[in-house]
Image (cartoon, rainbow over all chains, first blue to last red; front, side, top):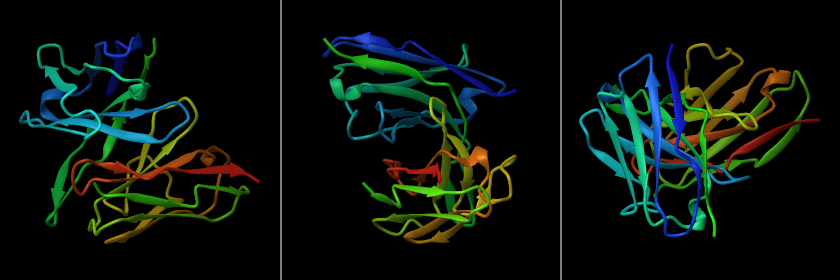
Length: 124
Length: 107
């Protein structure tokens, strides 16, 4: 059974740092694309970052230069290192498996499994 | 970044109603679009990918259509468990962008 379990959220002061973890079971993180998606309280979904199976990474403009996505293959775990945190980074952070595939000249990124989310609150 | 505009932002419907939600992209995205359902306090759930492909295990009352800039999610006969917020997501290019969501409420 595929399962994703996030941890590491909490209260942090503006300018501080936090590292989120997403422990996977039932599949191999390094063989898949993996993304982080966040949701501010009462707001919609915002894609944050992706790491490809090959190791390439991409970020939303709002976090570029401050957040770093990575993985530990030995632990089958995805991470999001968040530095220089701002109040607007307050959100529930979800990790998701991206079942990326290409067909007929188009490539698609369905997020087929999600974690339960971990809340990050940035406040003094 | 590609902007995704959903309409309506909310709707009220009754069990058994046919419900249609639309999503418009600010530029052509071929069929690179997914639909997600989210219930309060829960993670999103994939319903449709590649604009019209039904995710395994999702009831057939859900369907998606469209290509280019205009897309539709249809629920053919609304069930009690379908009251939720629905989001479209373009995966044509980075940054991936979601629509603002459509909340489906009980009439």
